[in-house]
Length: 213
Ligand code: VGL
Ligand code: ZN
Image (tube, rainbow, N blue to C red; front, side, top):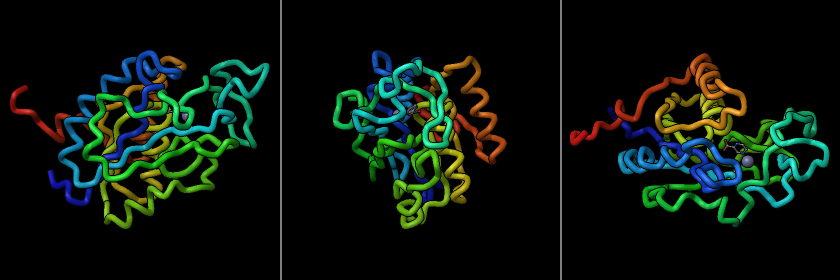
């Protein structure tokens, strides 16, 4: 496999999305060995980091009467009410300790503006504000994107859909992702919607086969 014009995008492998975190993704930390195995073989490695101000309006705590997991209207966009998570500079917002960051080319923070959420690593949920990721990848002459991380049904999904919209050939590394599954089946449905949009779905073994296994 020629990965010369490919980038690995590692979505939100942060403490709050792993076991014991504020917005725990079941078995979230299981993606770490896969990420660590793949990072060294990509010439460009980008990590995204969910990074919210303490009063971010995706937090249920900002909306008395709205319950966790409830969908409400936030400035005209449907918004899930989340627990406080990935508050800028907090422990929960840090990358997980066991994640090998030594191959990271660049980190893009998202969700930094109080009044709009940003699941995608490219644009906020309103599609108004770019994180700079698309421009960066274009500058690096990237044509293919390989995507993995947390969570399948939110940030991975919307990053993949925006990658397609931006014209990148986009592959999801399915065993390198885990989902929140607020509703049972959300992750499976997310994978179907990525496939319908043109995302190729593959397993980490198809990219890198460890001869010792
Ligand atoms: C995420 C919900 C809220 C994610 C981030 O990384 O998938 N999900 N913020
Ligand atoms: Zn968030």
